[in-house]
Image (cartoon, rainbow, N blue to C red; front, side):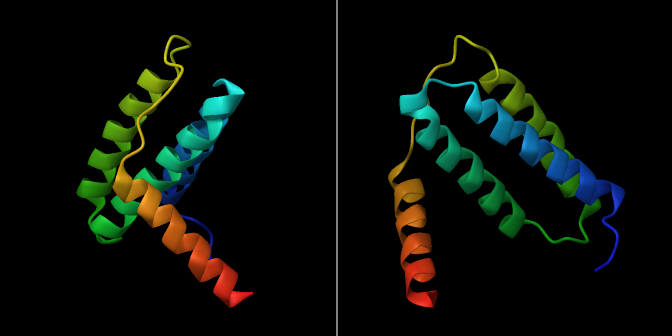
Length: 99
């Protein structure tokens, strides 16, 4: 396996930071925050080419600001769209069929 580039390390570090943020939220909303984080990272990753460094850097800056906003202790819940719910259900169906 190859060594991750600096940009890949930044993306992974930001993803870990977002997952740590989820654990700071009330237990009854953690599932919603977790889905939100996973969905947003998946959608953004699939929307940009791995070779488009400037777009990735832009998404990193934008996502970093968004995570900083959600890290605020006064933010206790988030909205989950129907697209997010549908995406999660389709992923679960795919995983259950693979097993």
